Length: 163
Length: 287
Image (cartoon, rainbow over all chains, first blue to last red; front, side, top):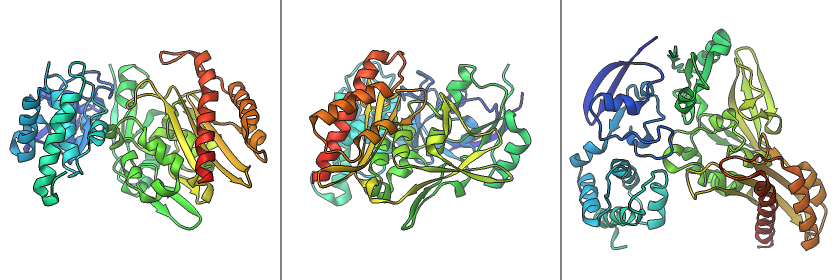
């Protein structure tokens, strides 16, 4: 069984490893201690494994670990490094957007990916942005509102005036 | 135990050379939307995974007066960013909007969606009504295949194991703008289509001069409904014509019962989807 060299940066940390071709990025990340990336359906349906790869949201359960070679991965633990990340965390807590917490890291990464595009705040667009992540607890309302509030504040701070 | 190997060619020529050398041992991968699930379900085992996702020359959207050319590795997100596709190829754009979810769209490729050949592939019905042609290459030669001749059965296409799709060509004609795509799913996103329809049409003096209809998830492959098209062309569209056309649609589909719906429901809903699409386009054409 053949292994292949993987050079990857996760939350700023450089990692060298050998991986099997059929190993998912999800399993690789969790094996390296990044257990904030959750394992749900492993089919690409539930989205709780969502991370950022070179700035784009991807579902890590269906991404081959080897495909992340040479790339930069950001998980929910990286949120505390940026102002918008910290705002998202706070907003989720303040809005009660977390119940069991299992979808939360996936939702946060989808939200981060959406907000990084500096969009005009729009609840319908937020719904679309998180449409690939399943939550069984909250009914989504508070998650959408938590993201919306950060989007509004961000938009205002970019000098766009009030929404 | 699984014995997978991996290689990531950086050029089309290198990829074709590998496919020609290893043939049935190979499995082309790009966005990998389904690869790991297939491995888990033991549909794929002991293959050389040929990862073509790094071949930048296969990722493009080019337009001239006559044609639109799309590279097979263009992702669904990249296609949605294209103003040309949004404004001029409406059934395709509408399908992209309903494709999986925004996260999967970042890595899923249009070539992969076609080559995987699910009967529910959402880019297929629009590309069928746009009369797309596929450029298919192996190491020695290139051939052009019309999309209507590409699908054989669920997950099986005319691609030989040393071939890959290298381009998708669509003629740039005005009918492409007057089109729509309607998808029925059990959810509003991240849903495998239960039934889908793509349609383009042109009318003059209240008569239909051209119409193309394709459906998905209602047969072993996505397909054009040529008999319904022939019935409609030249006719003035009224309630009686629509009713008769709906019956023909119902007779043209060959659905199965599965977790999403029964075959009876699918047969019934095929006529409804057809009517919705036709009415939408007729009203659009009226302006």
